[in-house]
Image 1 (tube, rainbow, N blue to C red):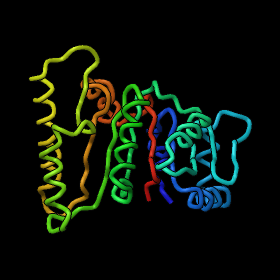
Image 2: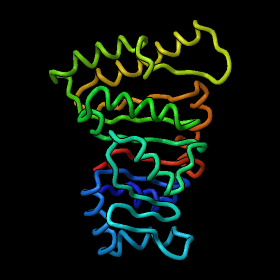
Image 3: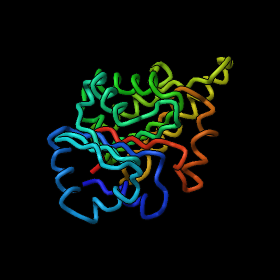
Length: 225
């Protein structure tokens, strides 16, 4: 059971709305736990402004928290379910994935990132994977990082016109950040992909650095355990 929503609630750091996505069978068990355990259900009700929660076997929707059962490989269905829970793609949105993309095929994971880039006007995607420097997959990850300038998934774009030299400098900074993440001791690999705008840092990062996500969505694709 992911507890991030409840931790944010306790610290008064909730975003406008927190979305969690996991497989339908997992969501069913999570909803059962929420319904049967007052320490889980009470914070949701305290932050809810409607008369009653919207709930079925594979989803729960409240004013500030929603959990949705969906397959990340079926993006049209995922988008439909999120929008039914009042997800607003015009708001700055932070997407977190923990040990999710590594279990998807390259095509499916690339499609997920392209979907994020195409749907949200301002977004940050954080991918968290457990990687050791002795891992057999590390050389491949390093190769992918060094070659990221040719991969549109890692390309950062700015609203309006920007020179090719500035785009290349930004791509180089992204590669350096990725390589730095790969290079130190035993660690969780943390890669941040800025999507859609180069001035994203100015729009969203202050919300994070100031300890507040009140002006942003938070979406956890695949669930964070």
